[in-house]
Image (tube, rainbow, N blue to C red; front, side, top):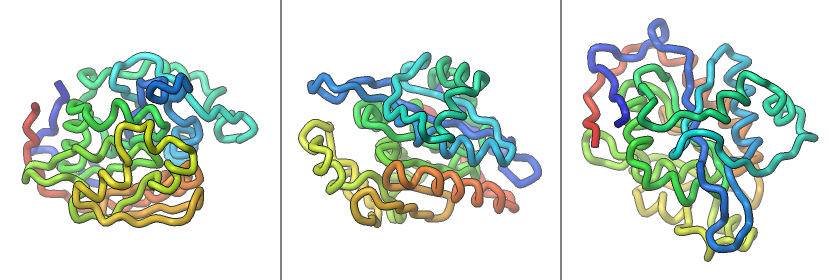
Length: 252
């Protein structure tokens, strides 16, 4: 069961831990196509680079724990290469925590990395949704890129509303899903589901960088947006200077 935050410990610039929790998929196939998938390497590596350069430590959680599948392994990208060659972080991601091992109070932000696998195992994972709600309600930030926002669609806050309800967001678009011919393979269309949850969806053209910030929520459209999502998430973490009123988040 995810540990919720203590109402007595609001996050502040002086008290908050410089730790960010990255969520990666455990799912390795695209439906019944036989095509392999997993977390998309650059959507982990690029935000990782931005945040670790700023002094943040990254931990990893996945729905099943252990070694997650990986996709988009382009080692001509120097940031990807640096991540793959970093023994400390390769050990961490390949021994990713199970949700029940996570203490939400240790983290100042949670970030959902993309990759098509997320469409099968992020949305219905209530334990990770509880962790994200706890971090957010305690004044922390939430970020996601590409298909990573699949993890946002069922996060509910203590007032019963969806986290994305009324907020400006984006993700991999319906047009991009159609362009890669997976619109009938994925279990739902992410853009449509976010809109259904009350989000105000904003998007750019196919494969263009697009990042949307609404308060302490940062979302990016596709792999081209991964670095900027990390940069915008960092800006939020560097500007949280006042205690945020906290409320207990009930565990499921």
